[in-house]
Length: 362
Image 1: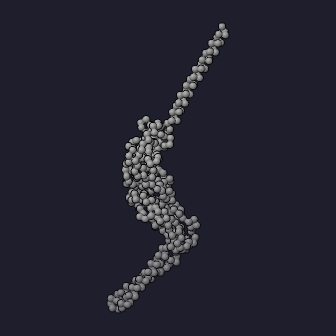
Image 2: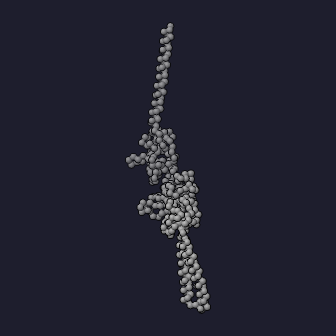
Image 3: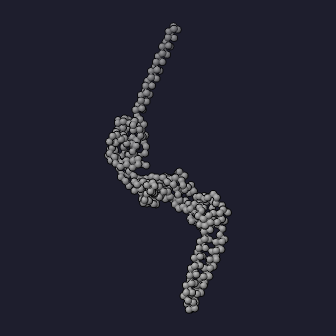
């Protein structure tokens, strides 16, 4: 009896073992089938086809500068007696930046002024004598010539005196200053002492080729972005367009200006990306170049239906600009085209799509 009981237990365990193995085998088979199905459905990026302008903007990069910049240079030479600025200081128009010793020039100017005043008094006196007939016309001419000569000497002396002082030409920020510039330093004529930049309004010069420059005109709106001030993308305007190309590069210069919204965060010399809006060019169905498959003399695209099944469709193309091309025939607005992994797609294959930006967007 005990032997029969043991035999029944063994048979029951064996039966459960076979059932578990069959269950695992079935699950493994289903997983393999699912995995095989996933492998036959490649993951691809798709774009939704839209209508738009083939060319709605042109882009370039440049270096930010102040709309007004000036390099202050000495007109004379001498020892610095007063220095009124530091690197990075904000300065006001007319503010004294640097003053040389000017005692000699001041004395010379004062003497010239006295000589001018004396010459004017003498000329007035001789004029009265001439009216009474007590002085000749030659005396009057000489007196007037003396006034002109004294006036010229005074103006020259005044300019020399004023040249001993360097002033800020407008409100701005000191962008550069020679490190050796200190009170007591001897500075020669035509020496650079500071670069003053107006940061309230900025500019950037960008360059385009023949095709792009034909689309740009003064007054076009633009958007400027900088790494130093990423939270602001100020609206800018094209203020000037070159009529001639740079002989060295063959490119055309375009100046874009804008009001600075970033305050002291803005820096001249930093890089800026510029996108200029242009309302020109052909309009129609647009598709990215990356979605095109060229074989022999024909161009195709894979279009997805509602079941994500790919259909290889021949297209008739128009003009191309950078990474977009105009489709004349073969696509309708709103259709989805495969934009990546074209070599893994074939006609009739079901794919696993992920949507990216519209083909007409930027």
